[in-house]
Image 1: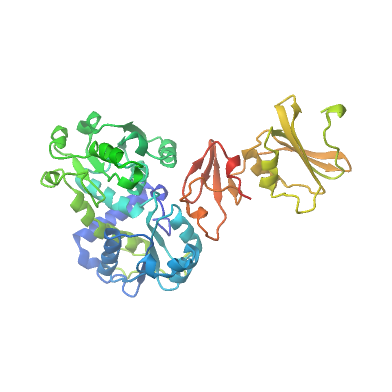
Image 2: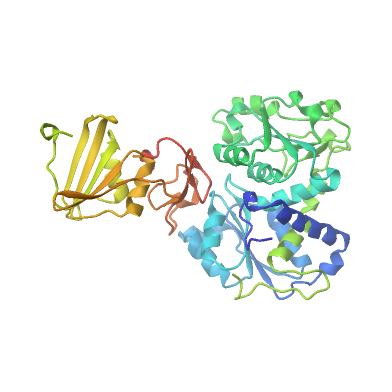
Length: 317
Length: 152
């Protein structure tokens, strides 16, 4: 990877993505070759908003590489609650760790953090902005099921605030992928994401109904529509109900359709989908481990397995 | 501008920013960070007749020669502006504004949830794109209404 940080998916080239995914494949095939590869390295987990799976996934991936993790803990019990700026917080934690994983409720937080520290920063979600490590595991899942070219992908749900959507859409522009976005009018892609898609000349279409495009899809990526996005609860129930899928919905889909979801789901994918061959969302979640191991290994200067790993230190640029 | 239309007097030394879109003169001063507290003589003509623009604003700043980089940022709200450097009542230099590549510390991000709107020790930074400007931090795009986000 050319960059020292992972801040947005827009920074990733096809080569960057394939390098991480190739390594993820190697990790998955032979995890033992990567065990203790980064012993003596410390990763700081800085989560300024709640997270279960992303935090645990990074923690587990780090430990499988022999990396020790330190965790900032809940924001309520940290110095942030005393009014410390993010810039100060990360400058302090930089002294404790060789890399930072950052989740923050404000868009642009990871960009800011990366300006203040010299160790690698991984954006684990910045408000409604980006979530690029999720995208890498999403791409890994797609690649292992379909490859990443000549593909039709539908992305459905909350496209406006969904950071996993913003990152995935940007990353897919590196590949020969036709993207369909399915959402209610009020939750369409934000202007900034459209701008990037337009700049790359990506093949993009928008729909309000899944039915219009379902049978064309190789991948359907479902996201949760959150109640708090709607001023009126009745309106939420009406809209969210139109973007739920179940096994019956998928009867009209291609047999090879892969259904993905960044999880947690609430009821946008009915449990009866779990038993179909379409369901890949648990596999997707589990892919977080090899992909985040590959990502950490790349950012921390891992070479080929068997070589002595070079860890990030004071010489890091 | 003919003599009888002159609303403000000529200046001896300084900068005259001419052909500013009508109504934008105060924003021009805001972008330049001039609010009168510097002690500079400042004259403003607003909505004066103009062959080119119909109505235009003119800003005259005495005893200060603005640099090209200072005035380039004006191109965002006054793309037609001309910059005249005055010495001893004579125009010694006349330039048009050109669009800068980035604008630092001048605009506030329209995205309220952008980290630059939290209390962090950073200046805002926007890339200038064909259709407006774009926040370097949160990627929000600001097209029209740039003047409303001037924060200097």
